[in-house]
Length: 374
Ligand SMILES: [Zn+2]
Image (cartoon, rainbow, N blue to C red):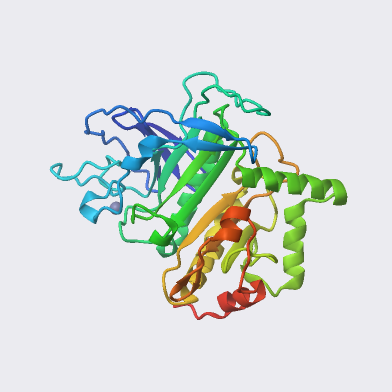
């Protein structure tokens, strides 16, 4: 049973379910009908994991032992993210259709998943806690049906479909009362820990505020109280005035190396007319995103002429608080510091969260600006 909805930019979403009950959503521009049925036997879904309170940091850890059996770097003929070939004797993948543009489905090995009953995250001040379900949602986003592609090789209209899928999933996750924060991201490269080569990203819906989001919220609130203005708006204004760290820009977006970049290559991309959540981007901003993001990814890979490992992380406001002070932006960070050297997050970074960088942000921005794009 498939239901279809209309999204901006002539995109449609078709909703269906896989054999084990997980959701799958197809995002298309062509109006094609999506009615392929998942022919795999209905397996039990992974059991829900557990949230444990890390009292030393007042933070949460999701414990999901079932994830150890995940597929690791399969060849193309065993790729679970490729479409299922029409001649049915081959592998039945996660995507029953024989082709797709962008598809989103529930992760088969989720670290966070739908709780069994009314979920309430306890306020923890002591060490006593009962079993707490690892409530939330983990989705996989396939950017293209092309097994060997990469995000930077998408064209602008394909990027628009991905953006609409991210926006649509943010809105959909907001309807789940137990979800507090939505995080779309892409890990790229084995150096980052990618386990499937097919170009894809993930969306996590957390039932708590991750510690970095909580820290950003605290900083944004303190800044607003002291200055009466929104922190990210003032950061963007500073970067525009300084010019020296700008990497790319267009009428709606700006990409810059932040003043205090923590990674050898770190680029933040923000809409010039700021919004709290992805769902609030208007047509002009949504349309203009692809050109600036593709330029950033191409510049990043051109710095050393090799594919850079990166994490592309959307930071937005928590769903239920902070809309007055938190602002949407995308952070792209790479641990490659030279053609043959990786910056490992060692003692100071991993144990203390204290970053030490040996590339100045101004140097990195100049390198990114000056590369000749193929
Ligand atoms: Zn594939």
